[in-house]
Image (cartoon, rainbow, N blue to C red; front, side, top):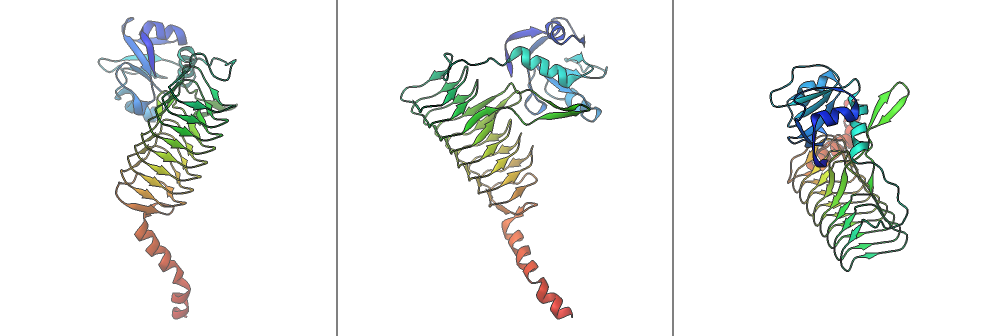
Amino acid sequence: MKFSKTHTLKEIAAIIGCQYVGANDFPVEGMNEIHVVTPGDIVFVDHPKYYDKALESAATIILINKEVDCPKGKALLISDDPFRDFNTLTKHFRPFVAANVSISNSASIGENTVVQPNCFIGHNVIIGKNCLLHANVIVYDNTVIGDNVIIHSGTILGADAFYYKKRAEGFDQLLSGGRVVIEDNVGIGALCTIDKGVTGDTTIGAGTKIDNQVHVGHDTVIGKKCLIASQTGIAGCVIIEDEVTMWGQVGTTSGITIGTKAVIMGQTGVTKSVEGGKSYFGTPIEESREKLKQLANVKRIPEILNKLK
């Protein structure tokens, strides 16, 4: 998430009430999770296991819960609870604003786009030309939809990321200030849910077609001309490259990459990254030919046992 203007380190520290290491006027341009940070961004870290990763990342401002040596060219925000303070910044720069109409006055809807009854379109939404939103589609704030997009009834774009920190009193949610971006010529079936990014974008690439009842987690990027069949669940921070096919009831773990033109057969559990141009099946995932051979051999176990007797 980039801010509307550049702020100073001193200004950011004042918002969250913390100490800092760096020049008062050190520039701060945005805030992001570690996998999408760029220079000028704040990244937070609250576990020693990840200190080095955060300090060595592209982020130039590190919100951290320990006084450490500040890398050259960077700045530190020293906090007793970086998770809490990252949420404070999200609320400050991307606050929730309640709606009082079904289609926000700040939404932009392109020429020849049809919005059927009972849809909700939030603040600062952009919808392109020649789109069709069927009844009861929900489009949360700041979502971007390209041209020639069809979205079927009951689909929700922009719900919060499923991202929590376990505390003694319960689960504390990491607030979502990101967006959903739907590119041109995308088709989305009924009752799909596509979560917005925590600070970045959840993106569906041009020409991709998604069946009914598919879930896409926060900050996931789906490439161009993919086919995703019903009841597939895609976790957060997944990269699905171009022209991937995922058949029904596929599930993925988070933070993996599925290579270009891979085919994931139905009910597969994608437990790791897989290269493109191959077909995969099973849980844990393997190339489909190998997995099917294994299943054929399993069927022979009774016969083999009888021979051993």
